[in-house]
Length: 333
Image (tube, rainbow, N blue to C red):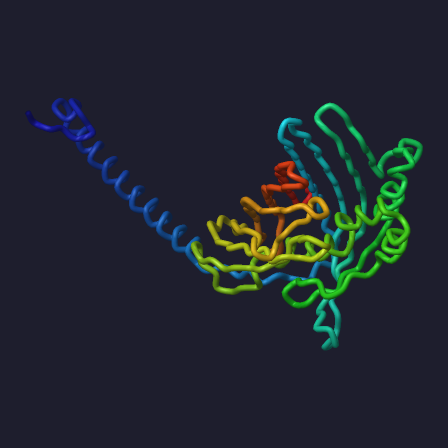
């Protein structure tokens, strides 16, 4: 059977139509060639290495939001499970002031965190146990004696301007402006517990998330990977190493997409859930996803999730605890 061109049966009846179809086919081929060249050019452009070094020049404040959620579930044999969710919301303005000349501590800029709103909620599935929002009038603050310390600390945090000296890679060197909260925490147990969520370590972590995820590397190609070692809480108020392997998974327009996976060093992490109890970490895992602006040279969106399961034996009673921690940081447009 004879095969026909795209012009089909019309080629039999009209030489004119046949010539038109031939011209159309040639035009299609030309357009196809152009589109192919454009695709090749775009692929070549996206294959170009990118620069992940941060820019500390942020004279105009940028509005960020950060949400922390901690889900803790404890299961006791013959008793059942109990779960608790803690959520902490912060909205803040972030700007920097570049420093002139060489600084003794290696700082190149001072970052200013201006708190705009702070909110916190703690509860179980059927009951809200604590609910605070700095945007609401003070008369709506929780009044229970047991939480007055937390309320005082959160109100103080919402009114603070905190400065952080950072090096050329965006790493925090020192944090100033938390004196009032830290002094209060020395005399109030509730505020002391809360300090782990709102204190110096949080501001250092924000600097890492905004500027440090790319490890200040240049000439990074899609598929390249790098490892960072950070710290995570351990027993007795100490820390253990948290190792995360990052990977540049894609580049589109002005955005680099970075993902990472990691874990806590189990040999170092021996959490003390109960005094005198035998504790074993069964498994733990961390996952990170980041969107990095190539023009602004900083993070516009960062999500982090860490889960850990532990087994505890206290006085012959077996207890399991699962903790799921998630963080989300993003620019508010």
